[in-house]
Image: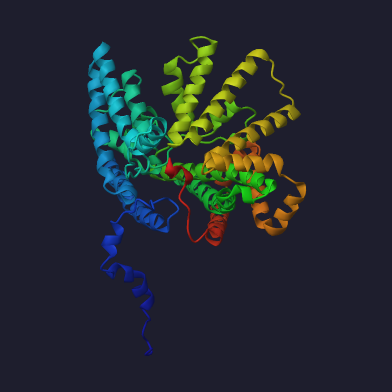
Length: 503
């Protein structure tokens, strides 16, 4: 290099991608097989650019709203392509239906509600359950209907339930119908919760559109901490445990009872850290933009019974099922037998919502029976033993019931699930745990870490979360840097999609 000259190659290397003739094509391409999600580097890079422009318009609420809607639609397009049109059609129809429902009364109002609910549900029933009904019809009646080559639009289960809650709340006069279509579009499309929840209620979110939270250093700290926590849960714990779980569930009969038992524990931790990690990231991103989503998990594996578990696990879904299925059916107002029946129906709906397979229906039935059993037990023995050892025993029993049910959730078929259970019950030998440790000690350590975090006392965990937020800026940045370094070092080359994307 000649003297007194500056090497600018590094600058050219940074901006080289901008000269790529296929850059725009890659930016605006979509893949229904590889959805765009929060742990993708491309998303984080684009989101960083999004924040720069967001900061410039944050004081103008109309611009801010339009900007977020545009980015949310782009976010959905990246995963579902032309199905964005279907989503937009549902948003417009819900908006109009709600206005008409609000103006009517009596029978006309009820008829409009049923028409609107049927319309919203029709998309979910067709794309998610058409082939399920075809298969079962062919098996039961000997028909020969052919499968449809269907793609399940990303997030359709979540935004359909969101649509139903909005229409029902307007019908019940709990909220007024949105007069501004852009407000309703903002609520439905808001990208942090769009594809995998939490299921957001209009009455909780619509007021924030008009009056978002002021963004300050405290809010940014909380949002970054939630995002970093979610990334650690997903990339450091869930994805690595998932590798072992996948191996065992591919052919469970080829593995010992101990290995199947550890896979049962592993999947219990995997699905918790995967989904709660997504929820943490979603809540963190929403906070960064000035909007607060409700908590979706509250240390569910510390629950002392299955009823408490469902108050702490996937809270947005369990509360939705209670408010829009269980209570409308009659709740506990129509006698003891009907109360148990309504619990079963509610959990069957919850199971079927997760997937078009009898395994999910069975999973929902098992939880429904457990809820009914616990309700009956409390009536027979109303005095609860709150001793320390009793709580530990109750927590252990509840966790193992939930973990056992997860086998049917994760297995590829009933045959595979029962093969895993058979290995656990009849072929578990203590010496196999030693063999597992010798061959997979890293996985053993990770399972131990996951268990400590999952069962850590909630009050202490909350206290630590608060203490981290008030650390001096330098110390706080240091901890965030360490966490980021752990994520970069340990994340897999191929980041797995979030489990709940498939639902």
